[in-house]
Image 1 (spheres, rainbow, N blue to C red):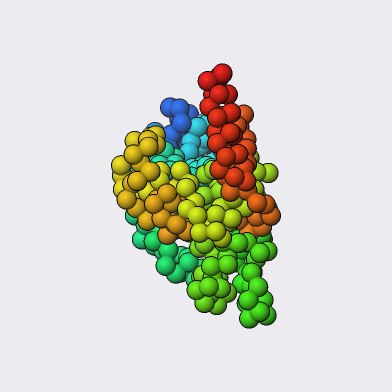
Image 2 (image 1 turned 135 degrees about the vertical axis):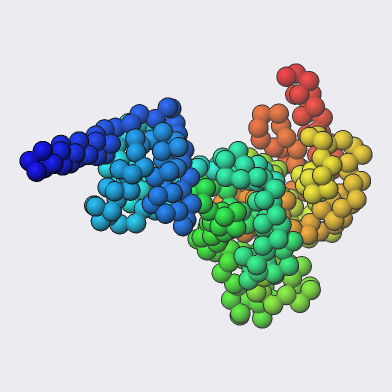
Length: 360
């Protein structure tokens, strides 16, 4: 009897020693180790995933500690392990939901194609999957742009932190939410006052590209003026990277619209070819006749929608363009632009630009 009791005591001590060793002894990962724990995983499945990744010494010890400790639920998500940790440390992280976030940087002017590639580069899924959402889930902006062919223009440039468990729609929705926040701050999605509309005055600071609304019987509601302003802002964004020049660029295009001239914006042709899948990385003279409603050389007025995703500065420039009598602008080979009132003056600026480029 004593021998049996002794054997039981020895067994309990051995098992306890093993359990303490398995729970408390840290395991050092082999470099950066990512583990994706999906919603619905049981504690046993989580333990198996961690054991397969060589992050714990025992699945049984992991499960036993969880039940004995009567801890809260372990949260799903992708986790990064790059430092030694024991089972207690790991379970604390899983209870907190200390998941890994992938950084996605969306610079100003990125198209939806660029954004999709950034999503893929961050390891969040295929670019094509994001593009499908950007080209189909326009219900996200139906209140402000009911006829939008895609989410282009409304995927606001920002640095985002996404997890692997987020869907492509949730990522796109986060970008649209950021657009709405900025649009509210600058007054873009605040409808013009009824009195101004009834009096026939130009809403939103007098932007000339808004005048067409009065000619077409616009009611002054957001679903009419927001798409046009975002489209204008996307062209401004593509034309200059210098914030202080953007109101002047806006004034050039506003003056052209008001006089019935074509916008002649090279970025619109690039976007037209991107949509068609024919863009080769550079524009040639033959591209100016590319058949597309987005080609602002062939068609007067604004294109059917934005040609990229503008930032705050370009949106503000579209809302509040400078008052000028400029109709042309060209780069000056120093990162800025020269503006001209006449075609003759513009040609002189073009000649100066070409001469400067030859000098470089």
